[in-house]
Image (tube, rainbow, N blue to C red; front, side, top):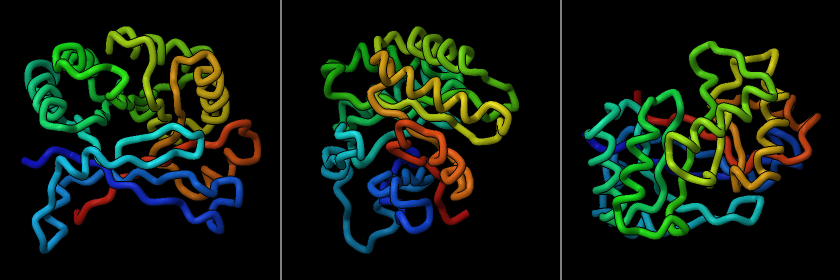
Length: 215
């Protein structure tokens, strides 16, 4: 099966408010990008293209996502091959249970850490509630599993925790200030979630990662 990839488009500010101008919507694709083109597509070329986020950091335009990749050797091999093949963006999450394997592949691939863009996410998909303190602790635990001092992008995986999602975002703002996450964002947020966040956020999300495929 094709690795899950990431495609990027910019949010229209008229939908979410002018402060969101420049925020990126990341669309997780379940198919190889070549499947959507009549011409041959160079995956390596796409993997080395970059976009500039609203906070000034650069992010590779194509990434390898490890959702549904089995923890252990399967994830390790996929990430190792991707990085050695030219990918520079790896997308994982606490919910996927394979952060440790991603981190091991990053250490073994021979590519400098500074050249790799690593995204992981707060485990807010499974119904567990995360307070401000618990969110910061969850990021520290993700970093420990990854074996990294920081991630390039940390996302709130879902807006489902209505009671705590605003304080979760405040914790991400703190994490960015502490240097634990270079960029911060959200995932699976609708327009009304972004509008709610806009009213209280000191820093707006650099990305909103959403799923997009034919099914």
